[in-house]
Length: 247
Image: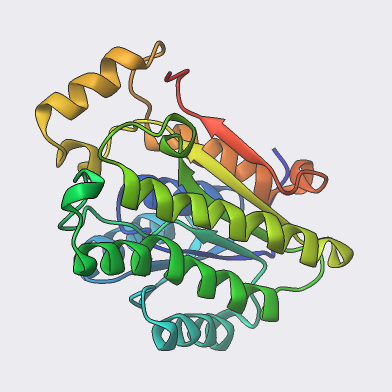
């Protein structure tokens, strides 16, 4: 795997789970990493300390990526600290009230909060990235295999992630002249706190439908590392499923 030495990466929602694994992998590959968090300051500092213990460079920056002002501050603080940004990973997420409801039961508030986190926020993260990334930069969006499967009860979450995938494709075309790649990783069921917060019966369905079994955060991090490195320079506008074969 090509080194990311000299690169600076922002990974949103990287105090735990998939985001943490990506931040740690990027740091291992030589990048300076901004560990973004909304509320989990202790966990974010733990990630930073772990990276620094291994000789890497990292800083924790608080920002709620559903808020445009926070997004702009996140990029501003990153540039103030490291001088530039080369790689941006849209990963922030949480299980919100109203997720998992059938369309007939979704409230306006639930719809708005879910789309703010999973569609509106990432849109403006990509906007800021488009403004500040140098030629040859990388934007990686973490989506979900749910957009391909569309099971009942996933309208708001799946819909917001489908919007993210559409934004990603448009931005890939817009930034291609600058050799900036934009891709989505469609994650399957991965062993994270978010997964374990789901009802037991839902977890059971994921396990039954995934031939290779539940994944680990490092499985997604490996694909992100490929896209971020030199080997990923000719991959753009792709939706790469990393899901253990879930159907």
